[in-house]
Length: 256
Image 1: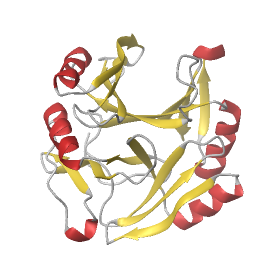
Image 2: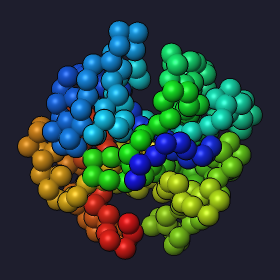
Image 3: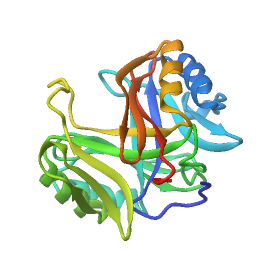
Image 4: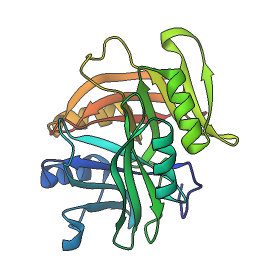
């Protein structure tokens, strides 16, 4: 699916902060078929990766403490207005709104439970121009320790509704904007290490989940959770050679 713009409140971009840009470029280029040329000097090492000339994800030098992470950005009309809403609803401002040359305006926040996320106010760069196809971003998912507080926070900041399916630890919530689902949320599973904070996970579409996982290991990555079948398709949780965790999913014909 090609995208030329995003509605406010819809995740529009993902990027990776990594300690080794060249290693990351080689890994993801092989795995997903990305072209990741060096960016302009004023970009500070940030690279926009593309498929068939269409931007699909970004990578830059790691700025956060701890392991490298994939970050998700939600499209907004005003990063400054969103920052005010975040603060008013007990969130934290990690990176205040700032201009990124003529590409747009960004900010990074954390919700009250501790999950970090970004927002993107589009300028020249509208977001991912290709999604939901092999090698591209397809879903973002909040893993949290407090479902009710998360529903209240993101509803206030982005106007999201939340539709929860099932009950107990296995319940799954879909974030909804109007009549469409734009992301997910689940309770942090007990088997996940206690030191792992709440986080937003990123999913990339692949043609075959098992083949993608095999290639991850061949390229020096690791398998966090092996392939398994879920309602939307077959997915796995993996990590790149520097430790950044992400998900791959081969969607079933029914889920699109």
